[in-house]
Each structure stands twice: as C-alpha cells, then as structure tokens.
Length: 434
Image (cartoon, rainbow, N blue to C red):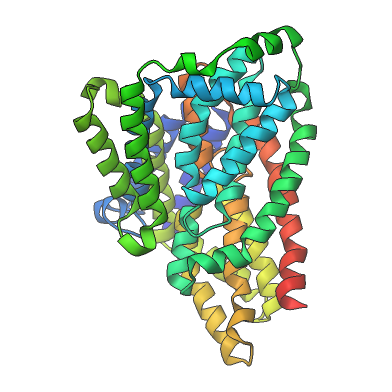
C-alpha cells in the first residue's frame, strides 16, 4: 500500500480508538477523522459528498431524518404508552417474557421494513415499559438492536446491504426468502435462548409493579385520537411503499421524507414539534463515519483487503465461501457494512461468474452472495458501530439519559455475532457445498 493508504488507515484506527474508548464524544471523533481524511487528500469533496460508492449515503441520512420526524409526531399521540402497557400485560410483567416479546416483534418488523426504522419505532415503547416495571432499559435496547440486524437479514428490504447484493447479483425478493429466511428463523430461536443467558441479571421480577400494570387500561394512554389515525395512515402508506419498492422504484429515503412532509402538512403539529425528536448527533456521526470509510474505499484499502481474502482461497468455491463469510463478518464489525458490501459486490459477481464458467451451476455459485449477505448482516452485531441500527439505538439511549458505552454493547455483540456466524457456517456448507 502507498504512504497515503497507510496514513489513512492510521487516521481511521485513531478515530475508531477514540470512539471505542470514549475519550471524546463519538461525534467529535467521527467528524475529526473525516476532516483529517479530507485534509490529507485521502478523499475530496466530490468523493465525500457526491459519490454513491465513497461518499455520505444520503439515502440513509434522509431515511433516518424522515422516520425520526414521523416517530416524533407519533410520540405525541400516546401510542407508545399504549403499546408499552399492552406489551407488559401480555408478558404478565415477567422480564424475560417481555424481552422475548420485544425482540420477536423487532425481528419480524425488520424483515418487512428496514432495521433502522424498526428500532426507531420500538425504542420509545421499550423505555416506557421498562420504566413501568422498574427494569434496566439498556439490556432490552441492545437485544432489540441485535434482533433487528438478524431479522433484517431475512429479506431484500430488511437491511440496506441486501438491496445492493440483490441489484448486483440479479436476486429477487423471493430468492432472499428462500435462501436467507429459513436460517434467520433458526438464528432467532438461538438468539432468544442467548438473551436468557447474556442478560440474566436484568430479569428481576417485581410482583407489585406487575400487578399494577395488569390493572391499567392501555386505551386511556391515547392522548389525541385524531392525530393518531392521521399518523397511522401516513405510516401505513410509508410501510406499503417500502415493501413495494421493487414495483414503485421510490428509494426508502424519498418515501420517508414524503411521509414526514405529508404528516406535518396535514396535521396541526408545528414544524418545531415535528423536528424536536430528531437525533441530530446520530445523523452527524453517520456522516463522519461515511466519509472516513469512503476514504478507505476511495484509495483502495478495503478492496485490497477483500481481494487478499479471496485470493487466499485459490478460486475454490468451498474455501472462498467460508473466507467470504467470516471476513465479511469481521470487517462489517469495524466498518459500516454498506460501503463494504458495495466494494465487495463486483468481486463476488466475478467469482460467481467464474464458478458458473467452471462447470458449476448458477445456484451453486450463488452461495457466495448468501455468504456475503450473512457475514455483513450478522457481523454488524459485533460492535456498537457495526450496523446503523446499533448507532441509532445508542443515540436514542443517550438522548434519554441512559448512555450505552461502546464496550457495554460490544461485550454482548461479539458473542452474538460469533455464535450466529458459526451457525450459518454448516448451513451454507450442507445446503450448497456438500
């Protein structure tokens, strides 16, 4: 690698160390790292702000912005208090039952929406129900972020990297359902069992609070029924447009912004009220992270690391699949999985084509796409910055006065990532390579 490449790696690792150790605020570390990348010409304005491959992913930023506005309006209706009481009553106040209910809802919703939208909707409910039952909220938020990443792997629209993979590989919504969803169901069963072990200290049952919850009427929590129906109608349209993306061809970011604009224009909510719940530090952190990772993509560092991993397999499909799965998981734990997948997709496309040309059929070669998808989606659980949903949850937690440190998230995430990727390994081998 060139001197510039080594210098860029040093800048990225320095910023990452500051984020991990929390010596300075993560937003300052990300923006500082992005600024230095521009200063040393590892990237420039065109690559950082306008390039689809190496710049700020404005689709992600505006998707988050639009959904944050919609959630901010929904919050004023009392619907989250309603859902919190409903969930607590369904779980009969039992902490572990409550976590199971919340993570299953999160994973299921993430398969239909994107995982970031799901955690934006479920986090306010979690805060309220944990407050009602005097439970620590941090374990529940961490579990939901991980469940959203696992559940999002099941479908084409569940996780942004899946959309990139589908586009490059010519894969359909049904392809993801057939090849990814069955294993995701197994992973969720295992994850629910893992939660019982990892977060066991959080499951302290308070019979008095549970009895109080059972006496509540959740319908009384609704503060503005007219606004609620207006908000749910707009949210329903937004969700339908997300699912119909292959037909409508509107990007999720466009749908979210249109939905937010419609909701603000059609209701009595003021602009100030609508943007009050926007997590501006989270959006700025993402921008800085995108610029830093984009600089590594721009100067070829990520591509070179990926090629070395692929070259190490000597063109053999079995070893290539395993290296791709684990390398993708490891790299997606460190850098955002969106630019990583964008960088790896052309390499995987060539490998799939070579596999077909060497006598393998297209279905056999496609295992490389599933290895890339599983590795990128599940590896994002390993660290606090590995996936967009993780960053959003940490931002919401900080805003509500219960900060989640980098290592608090990561000490659980590493275990979940390793266990889930380890389970995917025999699945890919037995189904496609044996």
